[in-house]
Amino acid sequence: MLRTDLRRAIIFGRHDLLRDAPISRVDLLICRNTLMYFDADTQGKILARLHYALNEKGYLFLGRAEMLLSRTALFVPVEVKQRVFTKVAKVGLKERLVLLGQAASPEPSNQLDRQGRVHEVVADTLPMAQIVVDMSGYLISANARARSLFGLVSTDLGRPVQDLEISYLPLELRSRIDQVYRDRRPLLVRDVERPGTDTSGPQYYDIEVIPLVDTDGMLLGASISFADVTAYNRLTRELERSKQELETASEELEATNEELETTNEELQSTVEELETTNEELQSTNEELETMNEELESTNTELEAINTELHQRSLQLDHVNSFLQQIMSNLQPGVAVLDNELRIRLWNRQAEELWGVRSDEVIGKPLLGLDIGLPMAEIAGPIRASLSGTDGHQEIRVPATNRRGKQFVCRLQAAPMAGSDGSHSAIVLMEAVEEPARG
Ligand SMILES: C[S@@+](CC[C@H](N)C(=O)[O-])C[C@H]1O[C@@H](n2cnc3c(N)ncnc32)[C@H](O)[C@@H]1O
Image 1 (cartoon, rainbow, N blue to C red):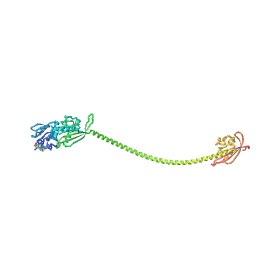
Image 2 (image 1 turned 60 degrees about the horizontal axis):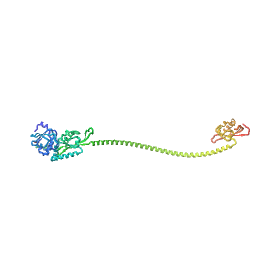
Image 3 (image 1 turned 180 degrees about the vertical axis):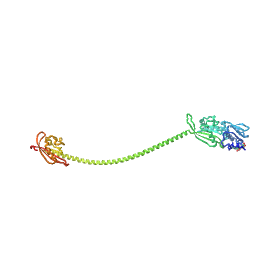
Image 4 (image 1 turned 90 degrees about the horizontal axis):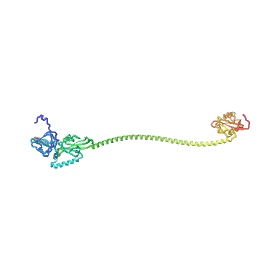
């Protein structure tokens, strides 16, 4: 029976020496009369775990009948008689490989060396950096990539991993290793950044810690691999950037498309306006064509009128020349006066008689002419005739012809009514032999 106060300070628990993850940092391990029930290989595996569990200055206490330890380099006796041992801090790689080899098969050690070498060569061909630690936390292998990546040298093999930079850079490994021992499941930590140097940028790793479990379920250690995903990350970032650029381009395209649609709508509306304008122009054109036809018809009518006028003009010319012929052949001088006594016609005999040409007198008042007629005497009878009060008038007056010869001039005035209601007078002038009379 344990004292109650002591019992309260103790935690009891079940622990399978072969399967469960070893408890770490133990000061005193008492494992009496148990190892002796296992064969030599299993004893070796259990001893490796006990070695891992014990502190650097801890003690292992075995049973009286247990003396197998002399075959290993893991422990050294402190008190042989009492079977008290302490652990050897650093164990050579060879011993570790032998220990691991013991887990695989009980082959002779030279065979194990060869197998170990094969494993090393295979590990060097891996596309990622890989290290292996044993249950005691010692580095037992590092492939070529791991050596070059973390600057490991051959003397680092066999050293506690916690003493090496790799145990905390780029990731704190110890707690992860303990976790995979506990869970017996691989653990993957993605995208761990390793700061870059002056010449290179940061690098990124997917770090996987895998528990190494023997066929009989015993934990041998852990493999830690570092897959360089820097290029993958860069590609992912570039892909992301390209995706964003594509999205931007797509948005720009959409905007352009919308603008084009707007422009298209505007163009359609412009086309509609143009069609309307075209229709209006067509209608205007039709109107103009109608007007043109009307003008053509008016023109035809005007041409007909013109032809008729021309014919009338010709007829008038004939009549005119006929009249002029008559006038020329008349013996007396003839003057035709309008209602204001302006001369409208002056025949050749009048020219001969008075010495003034027709073109000099046409449009001028007869009574204002400076010819050899006594204007004061002839004015009254001519006006009387023109007004139509006394009709035909005849007088004889003294006159002087163009050569200065005096003669008696018989002057007859007769009224003439035009078809338009106008009044005019015809005045006949001729020399007579008779003496002048009033
Ligand atoms: C002979 S008894 C020794 C008991 C005690 N230690 C002593 O000295 O009196 C052996 C003990 O080893 C334990 N044992 C056997 N295989 C074990 C294993 N794989 N892990 C942990 N203990 C185990 C048994 O349960 C048993 O209690």
